[in-house]
Image (cartoon, rainbow, N blue to C red; front, side, top):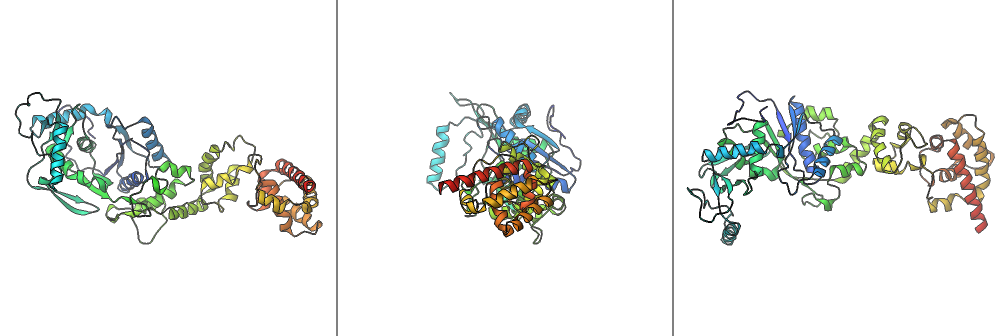
Amino acid sequence: MLLKCPSGLNVSLEIMTTRTRFAPSPTGYLHVGGARTALYSWLYARKHGGKFVLRIEDTDLERSTAESVNAILEGMTWLGLEYDEGPFRQTERMDRYQEVIHKLLDEDKAYYCYCSKERLGTLRADQMANKQKPRYDGCCRNLTVPPAESGSPVVRFRNPAEGSVTVKDLVRGRVVFNNSELDDLIIARSDGSPTYNLTVVVDDLDMEMSHVIRGDDHLNNTPRQLNILAALGGKAPLYAHVPMILGDDGKRLSKRHGAVSVMQYREEGYLPEALLNYLVRLGWSHGDQEIFSLDEMINLFDIEDINSSASAFNTSKLLWLNQHYIKESSPEHIAHHLSWHLGNLDIDPAINDGPDLIELVKVQQERCKTLLEMAAASVYFYKDIEVYDEKAVAKQLKPAIQTGLSALRDNLAALAEWTPESTHGAVKATAEEQALKLGKLAQPLRVAVTGGAVSPSIDKTLFLIGRERVLQRLDHALKMIEEIASAA
């Protein structure tokens, strides 16, 4: 791969292996649209045994931040989209861009433009008033000497005045642009810094990209970039412009539709493979299949199968997928991701007194749609109950159950071993002794030891909470019942 050229352009004539890239601008979080583009690029490279490159396009110094770079890297890591090369940063390649800019100037394929912002603003206003497409009029295109009292010029690419550019897009098909509709775009600002359309061409050329998969909002940039690439004598990659993602209201996906940041989905309790599975189907399909393993995605994915029309994001469908993956994944895998959510609740299963995390997952994974829900429903296994469900207490912890709970407390304390089977036996035996239906004792017990009316089966719940905590909580519940009776 050619990243630095001492002079001129050394373009490899060898047949290129498949090389794709994801090139986000670090001006915010990694959003779901970017994640889908990264996924498509990653899948295509993996399918064809190629390389997937991560490039950080950080030349916008005013908006690019280190925090955004970290957010992008964190999102890629969480999704498991490992890159083979990079991350390359454009700010570390400024000398290379300057070399190309001067090459284009020396070959008269670019020129200095001295037009003021005021002149360009007036030009644009006049064109719009005349219902013309706003574009640069080539005022400085043929200047041989700088005008008097000129300021720092920009550099414009000398776009061909005639002919057309054909984009052979792998998603949209053949798209033709007339050069007469493309103005001489700026490739270097007045401070000398390169612009996007220049840097992306140089990077794709030097990094030998074979395929460029990106959002269709870049389609209008492509003919301009192809002309620059031709001026540099480079071979064009194959382009695939994927359609945008819409919200369920048909408008472009944004914050008003809910979570749009990849890491926000993590915070809301989604598994990365559920989000990947959802994103791959958001514009691509393989028959009626809905659920794909990563291996299946790699084997079945093809750019030509991407739909050319926009897709609508459906959170309910994503939630359904997430529930499926929680149920079907190994307890060890779920435990790995659940531990992060428990950490947000100040719970470290390795330190906090409580059940083995994998054993906890086994009783919870059939019951929860998200890991956030699972974490919240598991707090009482590791921490003392701070708040009881008032309705559950009022309904279940009545004075009439005091004798039964007290007898159960003694029977549980007398158990020789603490297992799901032994605790179930104690509850059943106590119910029979007290002439109670099992549910009439088990439900007050559940409220006493969990603080609420919902939990896994009572025998597994008691086992996982542990003998000491169960007895302590029963003592507290019996005291609560006494206080309720005294206040009556």
